[in-house]
Image (cartoon, rainbow, N blue to C red; front, side, top):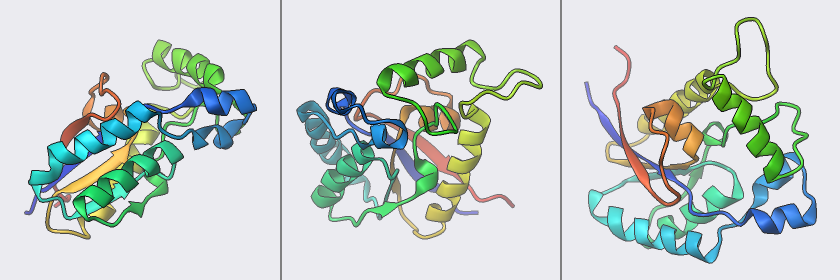
Length: 182
């Protein structure tokens, strides 16, 4: 059974100050672009992973990930595919968060509960198990479309859900092996 090498890449450093300063809410807050350091992180990652022979690049639809993927894809001559299921963790299913501070407050509660809703109590944020399920499904779709390594530009909580790694820095990657179910 073939195993696909997947490199889970966290997007570069985002500029949330620009978004918070405009008062954008909910999903509009996810339009934060990269900072100049975030752009540099994308360039450095492309140089670092240039020798792995990646044949496929897929990205979260959020601006910070797409901008990162565009830089990497350009440098590695790979087209960018977009998959909504590789999006970041949702701090509020209603889409009503008002900025980075609201996300941090939801994240604190998420951490207090170990990433899962307490028994019998639904919370507004997305539990880690749902993030894992949607991300695994997305990666299975994309791994089936190539015979070489895949670069997946995504977010820290998605990487955590898939690998258990909690400290992936902006512009860094984690290795993930995908083998289809028998």
